[in-house]
Structures are given as C-alpha cells and as structure tokens.
Length: 112
Image (cartoon, rainbow, N blue to C red; front, side, top):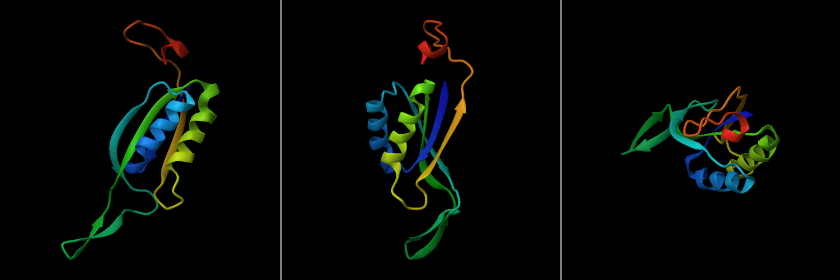
C-alpha cells in the first residue's frame, strides 16, 4: 500500500478530487495548508502598498491506495493539478506498513 500526499493549488481541488474518484480512489483527506517552495512566496499589492506573502495557501490531499492503483492515482493528480506555472505543487509517495479500519477491525488492503 502507498500513501500519497499531494500539495496542490486551492482552485484545483475539485478537478483533482473528481479525477481521483474516477480513477477508483475511494477515500481521501484534505487540509488547508500554507507553505512555500522554490518561489519563496510572492509579492502582492494591498491598499497601494507592496506586501511580501511568505506562505502561499495550498490544499494537501492525503490518500492511501493499493500498490496497483498508484500510477493511475498519480496520473490523475498531475493531469488535473498541472498549470505549467511555478507553484503547481508536489506529490510525495511513501510506503504504508498497516491500515486498520477502526469500526470493524479489518486490516491491510481491505481496510482502505
């Protein structure tokens, strides 16, 4: 099993969510997060004054998928989150040792 953590632009959430659902991802968690990457934030004009915005608002999507679904899920995210501009985000993939569904006690891939 793999854990996917995708940091995307806020306005791309619905597109990515719908694409992951079509790809067969059955559940996900989202969080509103802030951060910066290579662009180190950006400058905005607020009431005529230039203001440096250090942390940019983003959405973090977390989903756990079976190994066989990984490529399909990654393709769905990239195809629907990509604008081609700096700040599109990142995807992190890590191994998941165990999953337990609390309600039933099921373990492993059936608990996803």
